[in-house]
Image (cartoon, rainbow, N blue to C red):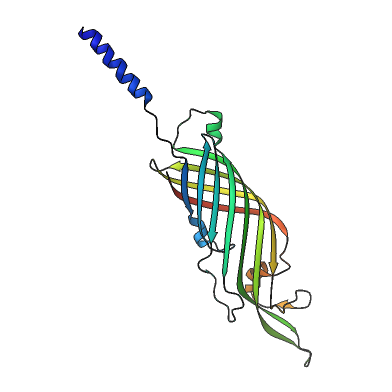
Length: 228
C-alpha cells in the first residue's frame, strides 16, 4: 500500500511539474543609449518597442526626438536646433530559428531596418573672396541655416542578452544605404568661387547643399531595456 501510494505521489508531482510553463514576455521597451550623444548626426532621446511574433522573430519600432544640441553655438542663430529619427525593423533570431527549443541568455539576431531622420540647425564657416571694390582677397564669415533629411535601409547585426529575467542589453551594428538631402537657407557661400579659410570647414562641409548624395551608411547602437 505504501509502495503504491509513493508511486502515485511521484506520478502526480511529475505531472504537475510537466504542466509548469516558463513565463514568456512578448514585449520589450528599450532606450538607445548611444543616441544620447550622437555627434555624427544629432543627439536624440530614442525609445523603441519590440513585439515578439513567435519564438524566432519580432518587430521593433523606434522613435527619437532631439531635446538638446551638442555643438558650439554660432554667432547668428538662423534656425533653432530640432529634429527626430524614426525606424522600423523586422528581425530574426537565427539560433532560435534553427533550434525552436533553444533557451539561452544570449540571442543573436539579423534585422532589416527602414529609417528616416530630419533635423535643422544653424552653422557658419569662414571663406575668402575678391572684394569687388578693392580687387583684393578678404575674409568673410557666412552664418546660415541647415536643413537635413536622410532615408535609407540597413542590415542589422546584433545580440540581445539577458542580464536578469526581465532586464536586457542589446549591442548592434548597422550597415546599409542612405539618401541624404541638405538645404542652406540664408547662405552666401559658393564653393565654385569662394575659398574656405578655417578648419571648421571640415565639419561644416557636411552641412552644405553640395553634400547631397547617396552613400553607404554605418552605425553602432547599444540599447538597454525591460521585457514584460
